[in-house]
Amino acid sequence: MENINLQTLFDTMLAWAPKLVAAILVLIIGFWIVGMINRVIGRNMKKSGLDEDLIPFLQSLISVLLKIMVVISAAGVVGIEITAFAALIAGAGLAIGAAMSGTLSHFAAGVMVLIFKPYRVGDLVDIQGVVGHVEEIQVFNTIINSLDNKKVIMPNGIATSGIMTNLTANGKLRVDLNVAMPYEEDFDKIKGIIRGALDKVSERLPDEPTIEIEKFDENNILLAVRPYATDATYWDVYFNSYKEIKKAFGDAGIEVAYPARRIKNI
Image 1 (tube, rainbow, N blue to C red):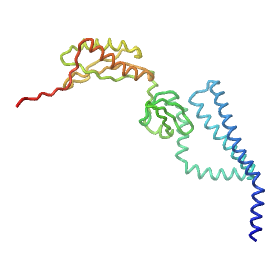
Image 2 (tube, helix red, strand yellow; image 1 turned 30 degrees about the horizontal axis):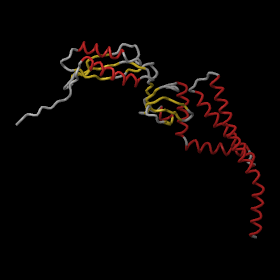
Image 3 (cartoon, one colour; image 1 turned 120 degrees about the horizontal axis):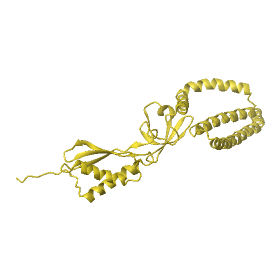
Image 4 (cartoon, one colour; image 1 turned 120 degrees about the vertical axis):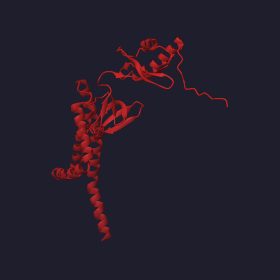
């Protein structure tokens, strides 16, 4: 009896082996072809001038659909009826849909981002505390390259669930600087020195900078200095402004006060 069962199992494996091998080959070759098709479609989309935000999204969607077709084809090679397989997928789809409600919400959020465009590929954004440039808007995720050179993969549902700040949208950014001025110096004189220093910052936008008294500190008068920059030149303007102001103060003999402690002799 045992020999008969082993023989039956062996015969069954021999009968199914060609189909299983063929199905595996269909999956391997099919997925490879899907990758090739996806790359070709992506190149053609770029040549057609399609919105850059939409290209990665459509590529991801097309890739998922084509891979599903490959899986169905592989199932057909094994011998599974397509109608039965479709019914199985439909039933599984309901169960998976309930289990993946969060993932589907990320998909819906991605569609909303592409329609209403709160941010685009290349924009400098502040989303959920992550500041960086948008690299891709995918089916489920937004890819951000942070300013400290980290690749942040943020689900679209999370990206759109809070306040989104698009730092590129208005075309320019205000650079907030603070400069200390000694109490004994004349404000108009210091303002002129700072204005001349900012003129040497080549990355600064030509908009008139704000130079005003912000508050009176214990040792100095604190000035608000506000030049303008693009999102690409923000840090250049930030650091170079301070360097030029420091140099200008030194050339003019301006000494900024610092906290001092007097010790009385007892």
